[in-house]
Length: 276
Length: 314
Image (cartoon, rainbow over all chains, first blue to last red; front, side, top):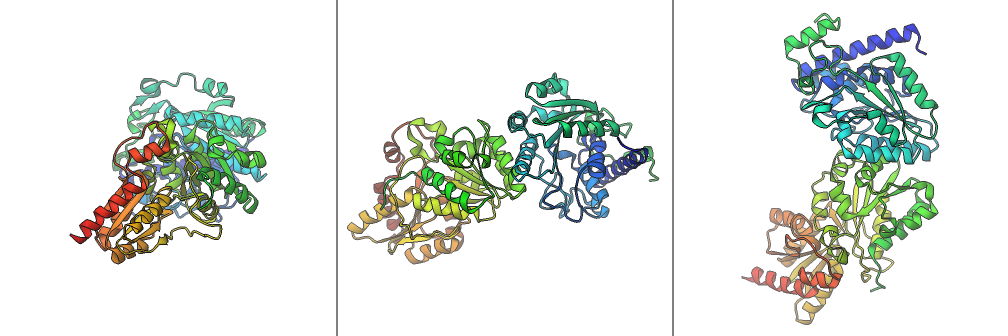
């Protein structure tokens, strides 16, 4: 259970992260706001409450791992890492720029705190499985968290990996799907329907939990349930709103991969309660 | 020359030795462990062996994840699947992240034989060579395979190890010690240099014998490390002998021949000939039949050497 104080702190972290996302995308003039904003609560929860990590020792061997399989949502990861102190916040405005430590998609060689490079969809669950297998082999109790997009589930490798997680009983791995129902060319249902997302993972042998992906209480309960589930991995389906927290971006496929113009950024920041 | 052993068998034996030396070594396979020869390892070290099923893409990215946690994964499958089916995973997860994964690719080249062109990888070196930071090893015999596999485990880099299905004659004695990145001069001669890799090394030596009988001496250089290429040795061959023939069981587009040519034209342009597969797919047949059909017998190398010497002197 989260205390009122913790809830308030996480809510404020989420607000700060949304502010970072809007500002860094406006400065970059390109990037992916929609799927970054829809994942804010999950990353705020993991990076400011759940994960055993140390920004001063990003490679600490026993740390919990986070895999951003939907690598295009890099801004939300950078917002979390900067806010958590992995690097100075002044770097955020260098997103996607030449020689920046924060590349267009996550690059573990350049950004402290990034556990794996990503960007080509469908590979992160496999990577997370590898990390979880290593933990089991070394008898370590760190946990692995993997975030996938809903459109990403159209990649066949996701289902290869979903079989591996179950086959190896990776109960030290918790995966999330950011189920915001939108991808670049339209709604998931229009582009290539996934039909029964939770049913698919259940059929593959996963423990499946469906929650409101913007609720910290729900996240806290689901992650605890995942941790208590032994002998199989847990998939948490996050029912989310693409572009969450920015009125004109919410549920708009067009904001998948388009940066806000200065006046749009100003409006978004005002809605989030920032001065400019 | 020792007994005939396939390099894939030497790989399986090397894994057993490695397991004793290095506790971080783990092995992955994609339902081909009997063919890739990882079975003995899987039986002796079941907890360090990961059967991934027929899912090469998943296997490569899983190997990447293991590597981030300090493991030294050897991901084993056929060359055609390791580099073709799983290219994006090798490129983006392993290569781009610079992860310490060893890709052990057996059944490379046309000597796969009966299975036919769908299974004969003629482009894997080219595909791996264009990935920044990828190291490429192509051992010539069982001894070299065993020693290079052991060396690869100590070599902090993504490494692609190209192995064959067909038993091949031994080239090296037990006291031979290859060093990653260092080409090995096997014969001295001044009329031309044959630069060979993999199973073509033994054939290059046979070609050199034939040429010797005809009164022509050629240098023979074994390039077990195609990347990073030993450019100094290549340039020396160009200066010393003035003509080069490359020999590889791979397409002449993008493989050893291309790598050597890139160095030669920038440093000491000399006439070159290329022995290899000339922009064709493979097909079913006995390895010996296919090597003849695709122009890769010692006699073909001899003809290429004579041709290149003719151009050098014209």
